[in-house]
Image 1 (cartoon, rainbow, N blue to C red):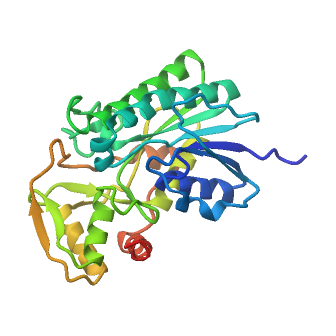
Image 2 (cartoon, rainbow, N blue to C red; image 1 turned 180 degrees about the horizontal axis):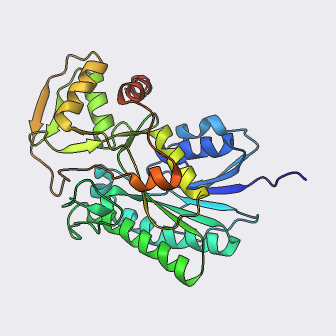
Image 3 (cartoon, rainbow, N blue to C red; image 1 turned 120 degrees about the horizontal axis):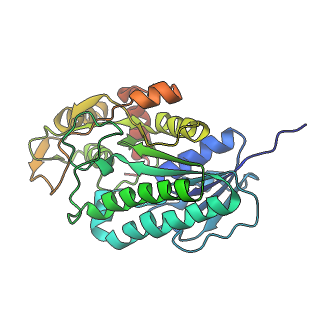
Length: 314
């Protein structure tokens, strides 16, 4: 008997992560239906899938009712603005996609008896008082600060996901995504990787906020997507951190980028933005144990691919 081809729906399919997820699922034999309204996604990210018989794209705002006239096995809810620039420019849309969009995507999963995964974020930990962050940590979030629209939208999305799991018995998964980088990131999205690389490639000053002692940890996109895929296919229904636990300061990171791009850029310091987390590092014990997952791609290797991509965009 021929095994049935699974059908996956991805919200935010034209985004940085959504498009890489579509590639992985297609490579693993899924039919993929992508939804996106292009608020922050781009046609360029999925143009290579045009003509693929297993890929169908629908331009839609996921805060509206999602109607699909076919069976669905998996719903991957990735739709959301996800950068500091977006939070300042479109805070209401950010909150709507995290609340109404999650509600509609969960409604689809419930209706189709599909398994549901929500792309949550390390931002739910806020400016953490616990280091590294485990899934049991409840976070330290300023609800009314400039980042609150994103942090609270994602916290609400997690709560709603668990409510559907408990009340409607929907099979749900929650991934908390830490800093990720790779090709298809937006050049001007205000995040540190595109900012540093584009400044370095133009030989412009690389801007660091504060003294540059705040830390981040960077996971290459292929590693991240593999971890998320394993979570969806697992039996585990509580949140799981997926990210790279190798921590570095912003100053070290800027030096690394300048070296990798062979740039003439100098480093300049600017004031620290409000509520900017001082430390961010995932505890990935659960991912290692439950999913047998850990990041494989070294920073130098991931950066060379990412820099090559940005050279075509700058």
